[in-house]
Length: 126
Image 1: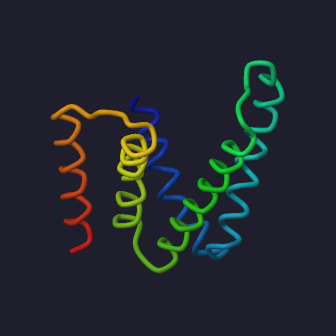
Image 2: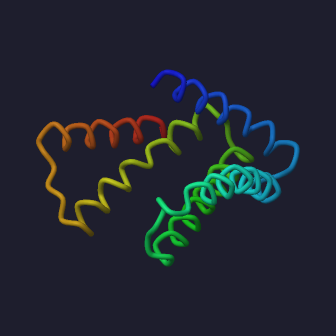
């Protein structure tokens, strides 16, 4: 897990340099192009294993694009130390949608985790 945490932190920090040099729109296009360069061959090699509704997959891709563009925009007007932690609270949205859309039930400790994350978000915005 640590390599993922470290690489995510390094990537988010380097995104600030990219946005500073290119602007948020060009940085988003560049980043998404790199993601496609990685994902298209992967998807092709695993095409028999990968399936799913096209609309949902396209919606997920669009949501990811909008998310990175929003993060890039935040970097262009703010600091990494604020934008990165806020951007990485995205599980709050995923959990909320899982409860609303799929009717998933959360345990007490999961509700406590969501509450702590919300408190953290409030603290970062001060």
